[in-house]
Image (cartoon, rainbow over all chains, first blue to last red; front, side, top):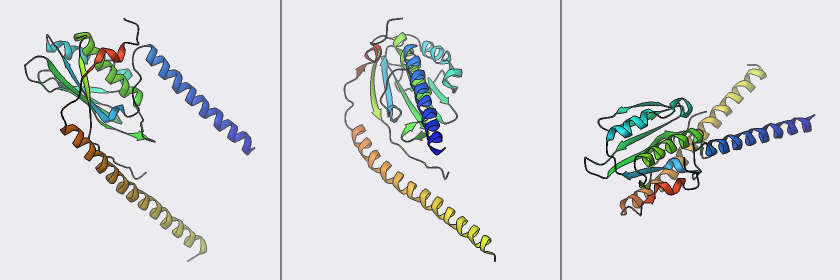
Length: 159
Length: 65
């Protein structure tokens, strides 16, 4: 009886892993995510590109599929600051350069929850970052990017 | 006081101790790990920024839309 229960548990676990991998492959195939390092959330991405009109960035950010990514968008188009808020994670995108060209934008995750060191919403976070990267590439195909590690503060819940 | 009540109190005390010590222990470990990591990050961020990467290279494996 115990042996059967263990087999059932292993089968359920294997099914869950298979489904997760299938979903991951599907999203990669659709271009909604790309393969990233497991700790991709721990670095800020700084994009340098030529932006002929800031409204391209604003309209592009507004057009993300927030239902699928699972976030809300708040921000200021004039200041080029955008905040993305989900239930267990958040991110922000903002312009760090002035009026001069090329423009510089910084994207970073502001908070996220993890399980065994992996962000629990890694897929959705990956989708948002991929959407931002694709937006910048659509504006300037020669967009340059560099990563800067973030300082972290870990919080543990009581339960 | 009945034996059952004593056991319940004993289990409750142990549970509180386990949760409390576990929480405090995690906090200590987290603070230590964050301090070590953040010191290295601050040092790295003080250095001149490294080479930039062509963002398109992250997507070169995908078929053009």
